[in-house]
Length: 58
Picture (cartoon, rainbow, N blue to C red):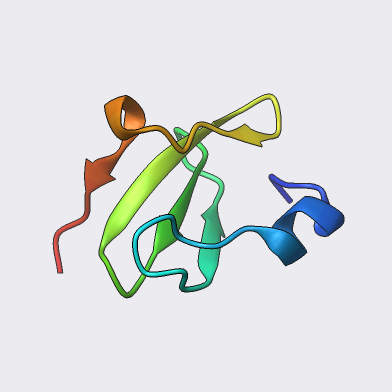
């Protein structure tokens, strides 16, 4: 598990507010299946800033 369960329960995609999925990696990241975007997780903290965002291919 990458994220604390309490943190995971309140986080959502910053673009569509959809649910995020954890992927252990490497590198570990959270992904939005609706928007097809991903953000890295560093020390249990998702880096959900535009500079860290990457697109996913369908």
